[in-house]
Amino acid sequence: MSKLLSILAIILSMSQTAVAADRVVSCKITTGKTQVYNGPCLFMPEPGGSFSLSNTNRQGPLFDDVGVLSVFIITKGTAEVRGLTSSGNNSRWGEAKRSSKDRACWEGADFSICAR
Image (cartoon, rainbow, N blue to C red; front, side):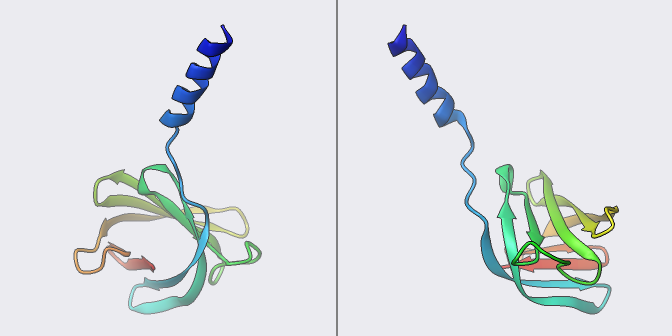
């Protein structure tokens, strides 16, 4: 029985999607024609290629009143972007496409997010 449990534990651990650790990257965020942030940020990867960006020390906003900016992959090359404010408002930025010129960037109708 313990051999069966060991095999089951191995199978379950192999089926878990590996997600890289959080890391500091260089971010450039624009809204409209205005660059709202250009500097270091904390890149927090999630399964399936989705990720979130925040202040490097996880305290205070990333920029303006936005504490966390999340890019959720909905299909290959397409993501839904949302910003969470320090007051708890989850604002929908909209759909973004992965840039064909720079794979580190996502471009929406009136915003762009690059994380390298």
